[in-house]
Length: 306
Image 1 (cartoon, one colour):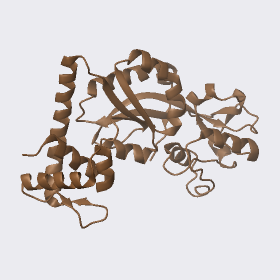
Image 2: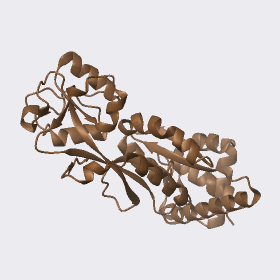
Image 3: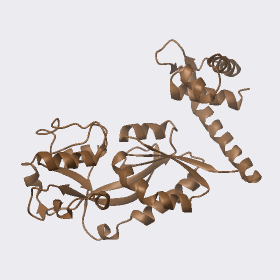
Image 4: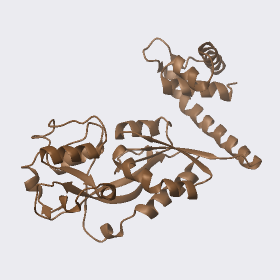
């Protein structure tokens, strides 16, 4: 019979791709973890881990049994939660991943409300670029991800949180609005690969051919792009929720002529998740605070992030 501890060791090894890192995350020695995994393999009658590859990989037997072990681990976690509730010691933890261009305003905007209204929940928040966030949800390293959508992937539950208008920051443009054609004449300033706002800007401004490699900033700082626009000219795109945090002339943020580009913000989590109830509470709180009724009354264009 496989024990809960052995299942934990196996799943940690698959996640960490290293016996040493898995042992450290489980607070045991590497020989102990390795021995317990071999005992688990013996109990199940097949080799789960292919130790001859670098990094380690699953055998065909492992690919078959690991999904079942993940379900068992989820059930154990639910049981532990129920026991803790009966004892009055339960405190849920939700691990949240947020892409940088959303975290920059969402965390400071809602932190106090999260603390006050979700007092029985421990929030662990990380900034992750979009590909890393999706992978982290898939591997159960985080419980809930906040990113730009929509996401065409049936593995995840997807909840629309809110929409936000996208503005063009171009101080040297004197008109109140700017056309998409005019953007073709200006230098674009882009975030690095992996930031969805970069891809949305490339798609919306039709930059694939002319400017795709113009500028790559290795980070998610919109503030850096704003400074580059001020110094060098050109433009960058800025989500509307950022504007209250910027000590800049609001007239320098232009609306786009004849179109209202918006970014759809979504929350994603795995279908099988023991924390669904708490995640739904978090979703409702974000929606109440960030929903923009005015955008629902006009025709908008959602910018694709991929």
